[in-house]
Amino acid sequence: MLRGLYDWTMNLAGHRHALAALALVSFIESSVFPIPPDILIIPMVLAAREKAWRIALVCTIASVLGGLAGYGIGYSLYETVGKPLLDFYGYGDKFAQFQGYYHEWGAWIVGGAGLTPFPYKVITIASGVADLDLIVFTVASLLSRGLRFFIVAGLLWYFGEPIRIFIEKNLGLLASAFFVLLFGGFVLIKFLL
Image (cartoon, rainbow, N blue to C red; front, side, top):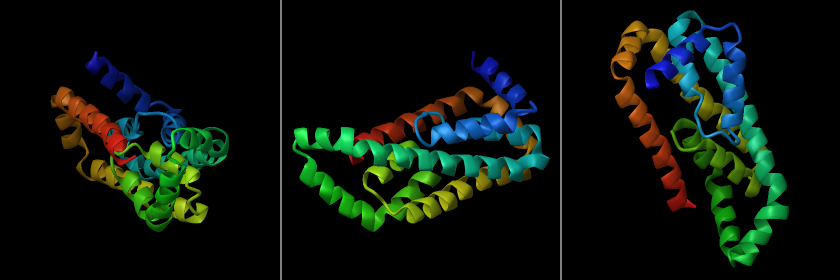
């Protein structure tokens, strides 16, 4: 099954609408979807190394736009859904303290989440809830997401075929590591928030 999914993804990577699919995945991953766009970036760059920089750029722009959508979700739903729940459970004061920390360290929080496997959508929504300055949020998102996607694309562009061979030989192990990191990110959220 894993091999079939890998082959399907590699075929999608070479499709004429692959950039549009990548943009869609990158956009929704930043606000609601749990699977990072790296699952498309990797095969897309390996399938067409000469497009590595365009792939990274499309992924970055779509991810930041999706992050702004996530910010909007947090910002617009806090008053109607979030605040009444926090007040009901007696966490209103603690959330005010959290907002203070978030305003002080928000750029670093957004930057850290944008670079790592930490679920970025959680930070985009939390940024909206905490009313983090939108310019700070956008710049931190643009820098961190851009850095992440351009590093991935650059490494794949530079090393190319040896990485593809490595991935194909170690597909099961790499998939397991990916899901452990993804699950670990969600567990980390539980302990941090």
